[in-house]
Amino acid sequence: MTVASALEMALAAVVLGVATWTIAARETFAAVVGFVTYGLLLALIWVRLDAVDVALVEAAIGGGLGGVLLLGAAARLRVTETPTATERPSATVRVGAALLSAAVAAALATGVILLPDPAPTLAPAAAANATATGLGNPVTNVLMAFRAMDTMLEKVVLLLALVGVWSLAPDRLWGGHPGPRHRADPLGTLAFLARLLPPVGIVVGIYVFWTGKDHPGGAFQGGTILAAMWLLVMMAGIADAPQVSSRRLRIVLIAGPGIFLAVGLAGFAIGSAFLAYPVAYAKPLILGIEVAMTLTIAATLGLLLAGAPERSAGQ
Amino acid sequence: MSVAVDIITIVAITAGAFFFLAGTVGLLRFPDTLTRLHALTKADNLGLGLVVLGLVPQAGSLRGGLKLLCVWALALLAGAMVSQLIAREASGQRGDPAMRHDGPPP
Amino acid sequence: MSAAIVFGLCGAAVAGLGLYGLIADPRPLRKIVAFNLLGSGVFMVFGVVARRGAASGFGGDPVPQALVITGVVVAFSATALAVALLLRLFQVTGSATLNTEAPAGTGTDPADA
Image (cartoon, rainbow over all chains, first blue to last red; front, top):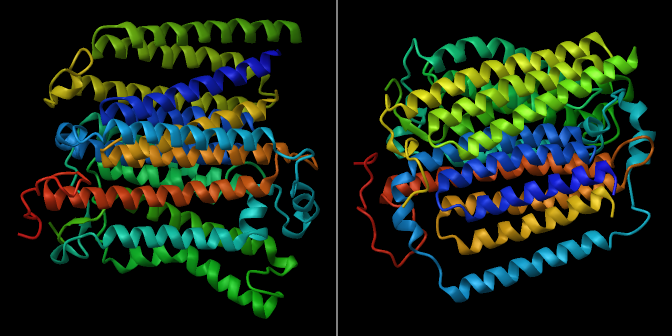
């Protein structure tokens, strides 16, 4: 057994242990902390799988924003913890669930072991067509050019999820500010961090987006960092969450998918099909879409975490 | 020359790993939030600092080395701030009893 | 046994754990966390498929990697929507149970009152 494979087995064992803790922990708060740890360790697995782009997304979402979302919800639902936990399903259901889960895991494991050899791959096709876009990061090429339709629809899904969250507001609060107003000590630690960190974080976010054209990174990873900076400022009480009826905000929210769709439709006229970029302009077009997408992703993620409107305008 | 650099790297990263190990043991074994924080910050600041110190000579370029140092600086900043916030919560200034319990819930 | 296979088996086990938590835990927030575990286990298996497709100088097949990135984003937006629904349920009923036979909560919405 080499050192590398021992490292991988240890990593897999720790990840599995943390996942078990996440399911088995008695308190939801502890389970969510376990989930955040799991997300960060999972990012290491993605690095070992040579998927650094995915590792960045996993660390940003599983370890970062997902943790904030779930910790916030766990704190607000703490009072329901004990009464709901007593509604455990009967032993029959639990044994059945365990058997079903074991069967599903075993089927997946069998599938993993019996994967065909040599493995089918689209990597040569992605490499052969990389010159058409002029971008060096194959994952960005797939996301923005070869399977651009997926990415565009993913942005629409994000937007629909936000519309869904907003529509949970009571009628009279529609168009108000999302979430509770955070009133933090203006001279406190959090407010200090929220003034110190965002300038650095914004530079890092833009760097991660920009480097994504040739190296691991990209619009989603960069946008997530920007969203985190915005959330920090909101949670420290330095700036309030904007009213969801704000027109400027809504323009930012639809800019990404809107420009993507416009370029896609223009593909009929200047390219050969929907979302076909003319080769000479592929790189600037892709980067233009990505700039808009980064802003949209940052705004959408920030507002998804802020939640449904809970205060009317000006409150 | 490169052997000397490698030795520096090995020594620094081993020392860093030791601090992480000690910090983790402390995090698991110490009795209350404040002493656990004490253990955690040692692992974060010194452990990560030594690991970064060991990696910088291996970075291959000035840019890579500076990026590593930035990572350390940001982790130091975040660690110091978060420890402050948790300590304040634990010492009861915000009065959240759930943060103060010293063992598993009943 | 190659590294990719180890992580593939780990992913399969995590997916099983997530499925169990999704069914067996009565607390909705725990179901949401378990559902995320289930999803990430499946993504891990998919990542193994990507790793095995390494060719042409790439460390992995970029197509499954890109699909996993899209999947993580979609899973996150679904999670955010589920959490918002749960918080609204709590706001309206004062409890966070999915058990329809449980005595109804206060039944008043402080926000709508």
